[in-house]
Figure (cartoon, rainbow, N blue to C red):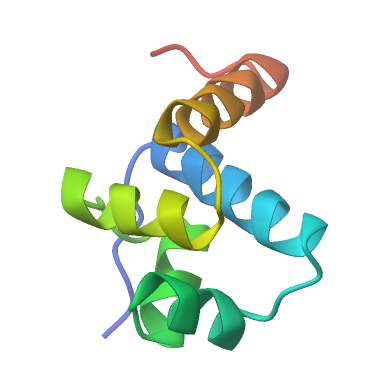
Length: 86
């Protein structure tokens, strides 16, 4: 069964996670270990396939060693760049 894609906003947040991870030169495995999440789950978030809960977003931000507000702001920036309405 194919994965369900959520809104473009989910994709924008996923891109923000991917960009933040890549900026640190980390693999999905490394971020998964730092955040206490499975690498497959990280990948699904990065592809915009998962509507991550607040708890998961906090774990991602902690794993990325950044404030959650910064991660969300990066997602919003990407939304504006690709012309996604909130």
